[in-house]
Image (cartoon, rainbow, N blue to C red; front, side, top):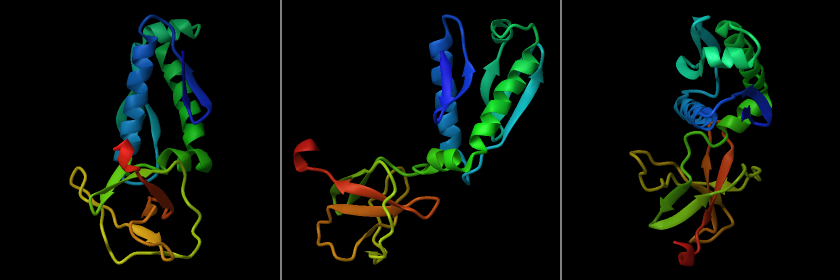
Length: 181
């Protein structure tokens, strides 16, 4: 089983626990991205040949074991951890990949505006110069709310509203049909 970031293979795991390990790695990675104060990831290795970790932003991400070393044709854990860290470092060092990882970071899948539910779109909207706001904020979600923008030519209730992401891109949220709520 392989773990990919964006479309790039970072590592392969072998054994009956591979699926569970990959799920934990992915969950840790997503949580690290969500918690990152800025869109930047540092990748390091900690440990020795008895056991090592690939560490991302100071958090243990990947536990590299003796079994992983054997599956990679060696008895030494540290070189395997260094190889996996090097691949991950290379991939997250790519500005396009980093942008893709962080484009929705910190934004909810849904927002409420005037008790109306909106669902997040799949990509940033081009800035056509018509987005405006009066400072209106979405309803609080997990203690946080977002300033909402809309197309100045639109009418209420807006079919689409927008929230700024970390890159100051407008992320669309589309009005949900009342039959789907």
